[in-house]
Length: 380
Image (cartoon, rainbow, N blue to C red; front, side, top):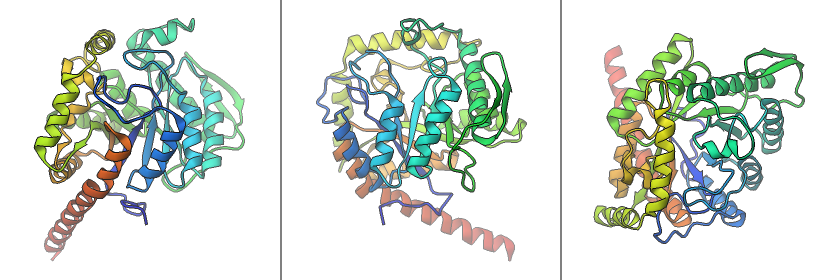
């Protein structure tokens, strides 16, 4: 049985990895990266990842060259290819409302879900990169309007996937007696493909509480994660819903903490300064455009932006023991899933599966045992 195959344990923390379907790796640095954005490498990686305890993979979405990413494979087609190359791995395709019609995407994902035995998912990205829209001749909406459109997009997806006569009348999308066949595969606890979203802003958090299955947070420390989870949970509760939480992290595991810290130091020291500063200017402008000025990357420093989703902030850098303990500490705060990036994917994913993940499962088992003893004592 593959390491970490915990299908029947709903309490176990899950792991996903960023699919390197975009050139340049997961850090904007000129350090050597033995990671390739091509399909052959990614097919090998997907099989390796599912055999080393990963449950999900997330294919990135970029449409044009930007900030150290000169080349990009399209996310939905690439995700389907990875689904067909694996047996158990769930693959999440990142997509942009405004560049997709939800009915067309619903059809594509339904087909991918049928072909993969129910393993397709989507990550709805409201968008931060203006050029991806304007260079295609599409309108660039104000920040909160982009999230309003994304919310309608998700509602339409869910309506199409679950109704035989889908109807929707919104400001951005409309359906009239639309029937999609075949629909995605349904299973207990999964009435349709899982819907993920990201974003740190107030608009993003409220949208997650109202419509999403999963909320992805940029990398953050314990206090930041606690605040975000509390906010989204409160919004979800107001709508009679629950939301699961994913946390971005860049993981550097080495036999000694000094080795891991040296890798981080070298990544930052060799950062592509021009690309990092360009990315920082673009994303901070997007964050400032929120109604209350609270958006993604608003307080990110240069070092944070070298890993473009603040992955260093989560602190999964050190020995296997240190990282496992920190993962379980985040789990106690309510993190259900870690979305991981690596420097040298093939080597680092295997090291994670062999050295880090078994320690995480041991710590989880120990905590579950303590909780069982406490419950028994309370009931006696």
